[in-house]
Length: 96
Image (cartoon, rainbow, N blue to C red):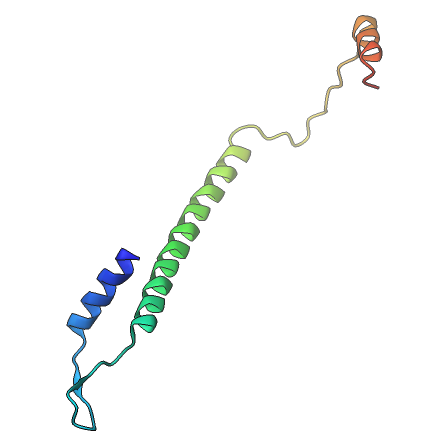
C-alpha cells in the first residue's frame, strides 16, 4: 500500500492540473482509486515479466539436465534379478 501511495504522489506531481469548468478551482485529473489500480497493474506486469524470465531460465536448465550426456536412446534397460533372499523379504513385508 505504501508503494501505491508513493506512486500516486509521484504521478500527481507529474500530472498537470487543469482549472475546473465551473470556476471552483483546480480539478484533479484522476481519482485515487484509479491511481491505486494503475499502480497495482504496473506491479502485476512487472511480476509477470519476471516470472516469464525465470520460467525461461528454468526451461533452459531442464533441457541442459535432460541432454547433459545422459542420452539413453538405443540402450537396453537392464533388469536386476531378484535373489531368493530379497523375494522372501519382500513377501514377508507384504510388498507384492
